[in-house]
Length: 278
Image (cartoon, rainbow, N blue to C red):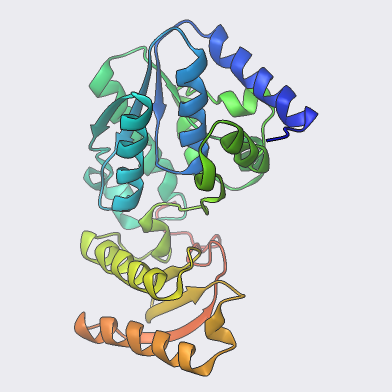
């Protein structure tokens, strides 16, 4: 594989950043490509302990947990699974516009409770994340959470190239998979039943369509299925009708109102102008 000079330089910068820290590092491993790549590179170049901390939760797809376990076994990582405890937070359950602040706060506090005060927690936050509204970054700042990608000046696209260079293969193209709670419209309380339903719908649609960028949105008046804009369903009436039937049946089985199928819109369940919980 031919690596561009820029990526080679960024990889070297990241390795130097990671090696320079001599304390044990606890990487918050979500199962997404950002944290998986960070853990892969850190485990290779650091001499001090590097421990993967993965939260098992109703809001985390089981596929993400399985991915963490498989890679930990393959690369001999130390993997600790824990309950992030976000469902103990009434603020999180209320699902305000800054829900991610309470989620990340619970995660970081759970890691501290597991490994002790003064531990150094690291995340896969990259430079692109800094330009978005991400309340979880506030929780990270409050706890001095380390962001090696930011320190090395690495963006999301660069992470994908680093993942390829690090031997993660097809995982480099893993689509963004925020937690299942992101499918619940702002202001609708988070509950395990809704999250399980969301996961069921997305799993069934992914299996049928062979696509990954699929969302099941719980909105105020029902359920919306979102598919990639280039999905075959939008050009083939039979495929579209099958999708409608599949989601409609799942909704009927769970006493839910099916509203429509539409193109995927990132963050469309997130109502920024909502004042809930603020």
